[in-house]
Amino acid sequence: MSAATTSISLRLHQAVRALDDPPSAPGWNHSELHDLLGTAACRPASVLVAIVEREGGPSVLFTQRTTHLAQHAGQVSFPGGGVDPGDHDAVATALRETNEEVGIDAQQIHPFGYLDCLETVSGFCVTPVVADLDSDYCATPNPGEVSAVFEVPLAFFIDPANLRRRRIDYRGRRREIFEFSHAGRIIWGATAAMLLSLVRRMDALT
Image (cartoon, rainbow, N blue to C red; front, side, top):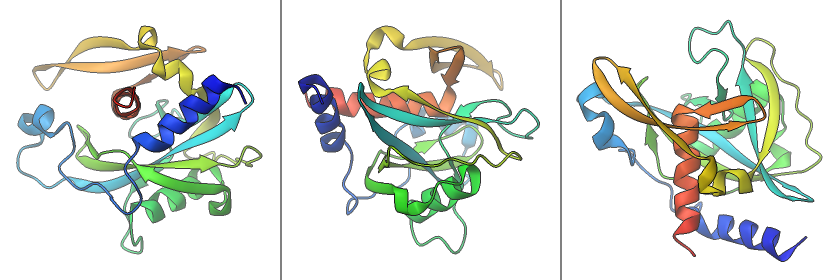
């Protein structure tokens, strides 16, 4: 492993919130969505930001949703979803949802921290769980939810030249959203915002 790769991995592990310091609502972007979401409580959810150590450096695991879903059809996302009553914490939700969506066993996933919560226009308050994922993981996507599982080098997101900003109209209001384009796939919306949160936390260490 090169010195640059070691540096990225070390910064990543240092940048996240510790497992004994879980984040809580509201999300870091609450002020941006307050006029859209009002005073209604957001539904808690969790996603897994899985990091895979590769020869060229750490990479990030993503799913591409199937095109027939009622929400987020065809979009790139992290595995995850809403908290179930039987989930004792955000980590449990992320592990359960990852297994249900892509068939990765929890024993291959090693959580080590959190990112700050993020609120979404669909009314969720998402807790990102950051974890190391065994490089020999076996993914078996649930065809009812996921059409593909793929990785993108973490260094791609760290490079500021790859971040794009654009404005959209949503419910009569102009909003700025973030996106990345990699190998023909667009990573945008809440997923891009969580990646940006991670990159900003890593940049704060330099």
